[in-house]
Image (cartoon, rainbow, N blue to C red; front, side, top):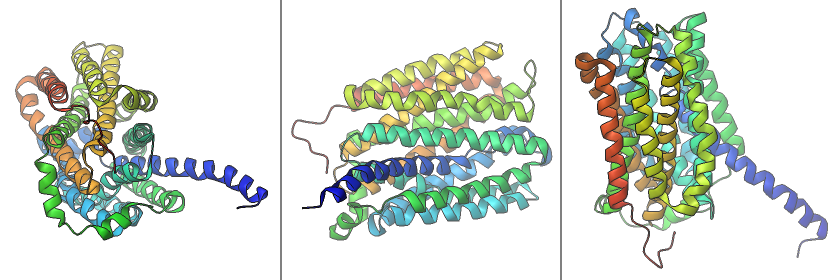
Length: 406
């Protein structure tokens, strides 16, 4: 038995470790989303710098999301084999390299190449941190996942805001330099504060089933397949909205500057505040309820952006992005409920479908934009949001009695 003094030290030290663990996954979410969508407010500048069309320059976003979709399953395999932290921290360090090199681009294809490499390293942070939470939190997974998603919200907001403000004062090239330095700082925090995983490496070493077989098993699970489809729709909605709204607001009657477009993403902070509160509701009321509530509000929000008044547009964007963040929390934590084995592989597949959705969200609305402008994009986005609600209602059934999370 420990001496009384040692027990007192343990009582005081344990909450500190728990808080640092939570902070570490928040920083992981921040780092994963810091650079991924940072060029969105820069798109009007890049359009003129590289003499490209809106559809062509939007592929700066698509390049990263395609790479994430391709790399996500391999990140899950690596995490199941080597452990979560041993993948998360190196991925964050390596992410800074193409971010810095993006500043050297002299042609659009070069920028797309470095953006593609950014996407290659991102799943090692994003997908593996979700698996880390599902493994390391014995209770309150919904709350922990919501804290992580709040980190992604802050990262997405900060990346866009930093890129826009730096580009407004200097150039878009310096924006990538600053983002690379922030990536490095986040990696160091995660290295210092993230505890080694207690469960994952042991399970991985004992697992003899081939990872491909595990993935095929996941793809035969209707609830997981529906969750992957939900992930597709979630990121499709976010990318489509916040890529093409920049062209909408840069044109009359709004005519926003680059710095103003960066500050537009202040609406993300609404999601950062609301999502942790809803995380408790996910734990109490269920994933399906949270998804339905989130995307009903999101569909109303995207329709509000059709009103050509800036306060109404901001309200609509706030509702839309908050719905996405809550939907992402619900879907991410639902994977931990459904997948009982090879969770990192299950999350890797989720992230693959999630970012395929993001790639489609950057590319497909361009055709609607060229024919119908922003109203055409809104019609497409609202349809995808309603499809998301239907998927959750039909397939996100509660776990059967006796189901245990392992």
